[in-house]
Amino acid sequence: MRSLLLALVSTLLVACTTAQAKPTNEGASTAPPEPKQPAISHLESSTPTRILFVGNSYFYYNDSLHNHVRRMTIAAGIAENDDLIFKSATIGGAALRDHAIDHLLDAQNLRVDAPFQIVIMQGGSAEPLSTTGRARFTATAAAYAAKARASGVQPMLYMTPAYVPPHQRYRPDMINDIASLYVETGNAVDALVIPVGLAFAEAYRRRPDIELHKSFDGSHPSMLGTYLAAATTFASVYSVSPVGNSYDYFGVVGTEDARFLQDVAHDTVTAFYGRDSQR
Image (cartoon, rainbow, N blue to C red; front, side):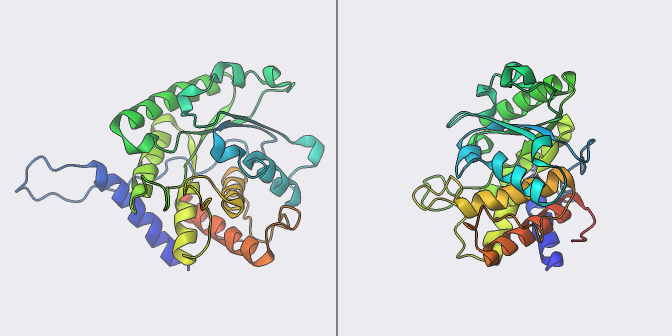
């Protein structure tokens, strides 16, 4: 199973790179470019307790991503309830540049006494699909990452999932555009990338019938999609496997689905970062 996922991640990252490269000479024979790999595989802080999520409706659907990550962290025994401060700042339909990052990075503006340790930043779902959107996202991520570090906060980037039918802009290879943008930007700004988009792709590969998106738009996450995103975020932040985590959103996520999504999150994260695969 792990070898199949490694092949998927490698194929996606190769495609992400080659999709951006255009031959300068039609008749020339050139070696394929090296696939882009994430340069950052671990956070500086192994057990952050103060995390800021900055994104849009992909975060706030289904009782908000930050709540699920927080509960998984408690269930894993990493920290107690009173020790965790997770805040979420979201704007529906927002691109990354729409957020007032200076205001948000000042923790006291969100009634938090101590500075945040991590900021998880999510771009708009359509930003990877155009040259203009990609350039704006990269420029904004670079500026916001610099501001975060100046405030003592480590930046992270949240790779969004691709659209699925019935979304009008659905394309089977959309994940290539997303992954390439986030990996290249993460490497450029020294930010850890959370491979949620790759986890969705892997879950659909293993179980094509699973519904990780809302059926009415093919864009927003379903409850299972948010659970997978939370498990992937949890594993990325803490370098701890989500497999066996008891959190199931108070019985809403079934045992079989929870274990399947935990497995996908674990396998995706370990393959993406090249981490130890021990569960």
